[in-house]
Structure formats: structure tokens, C-alpha cells
Length: 245
Image 1: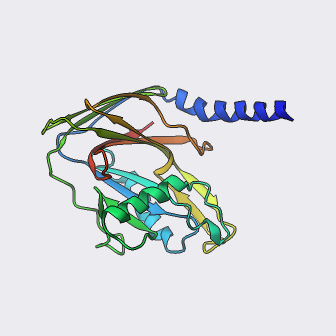
Image 2: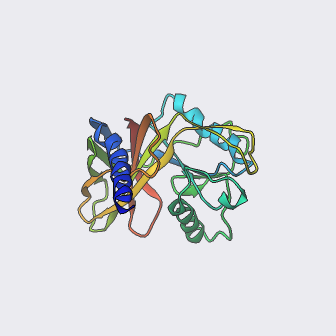
């Protein structure tokens, strides 16, 4: 039995790393003006989430995708108790949303919830507008990817001695689910920009050399990458980049 367990672990490790090892060489670079990181906190078990996800999915054809707008979908796990296990959900994402609530003195978390450049975004309840692009000059974020190895540097316009955090999100694209229980039972869900691997790495000199995060969901054919910088102890992004892999 122990030998079977070890074999299964080996297969899981190979599956999780094989996709990352095949990404090849990519380079992403921002301008000096802040790009807009659009975070959606969502769940397949939330009946009011499909319109929000459809809106986020629409950025796939936006002419300023990856140039001005960096969308990511964090699937939270606190809806799973209603009878449907969201396979993209992760407790770390629920914790991240809870930290936003703590920092903003909010009494509760909810889905769907949009956060744009660290600020709650609710003015557009019908999802027919695009968040205003930021014209704040923050600095240039450069990212180089060689298969599973990632290097990054952030050239801030206001250099000072501080600890910066590099946030790395591997995204799954063109994902679908037939939901068979819970509030969305019978629905065909379509997902884009789903975070399927996430890690943070600190630096005191604004340079990073690290591996991509381990993928906790690997049944993906099309990948993308989102990377952003924030200050230690904060979630608000200073600069973000991304692109298709």
C-alpha cells in the first residue's frame, strides 16, 4: 500500500510540474503608469456570481487586456458547505479576501466581490462599464519567465528601503464546469483568469528569482500569468503585469 501511495505522489508531482516546465521563455513589462489589477472573489456555489464572472470573462477580448487591465479570479471556499465543492476554490483565497475586509474595516465578506487596485469596486452593479484606468505613475515591473523559473525587478519612481512582496498567480483559461448541486445546480459555468497557483515572495532590493507556484489544479490546456508588487503588510498593488503563456 505504501508503494502505491508513493507512486501516486510521484504522478501528482510530475503532473503539477510538467505544465510549468513547458511554458518556455516569456517577458512581460509594464509602463511607468499603474496597471489596474482586477480581482474577483467568486464561487461556483454562489447564485449571484455568474454575471460577475461573465463580466470578468469579457476582458479576454478587451483591447487593453494585459496592457492596462490584469484580471484574476480568486475562487473562495466558504460556499462549499452548500453541497457543491468548487474545484478551483482554495482556503488561502478566502483568507486573502478576509484580510481585505480587515484592512478596510468591513464587517463581512461576500461574493461576488470586485477589488480594483486594492479598493472595493461596486459602482457598476450591472457590469457594463470598465474600471477607470489609473494614471498614477508608480514604476516599471519587469518579469522574465524561463519555463518554471521567474525573475522580476521593480523600478519604482520613489526608491526607498522597504520590503516589497511579489505576488505570482498562474491562471487557468477556458475552463468549464457542469454544476450538479448547490445554488447553481444544472448550470454550465465558463471561467477565465482562474487562479490555480499562487505564491508570494518578499524582497528588500526589488529583485526576485523564484520558481512558479505549485499548481493545485492542473486539468488546464490554456494558461496565463499575472504578477504584481505590493508593500509588506499591504494588499494594494503598486504595479501589475500579465500575459498569456
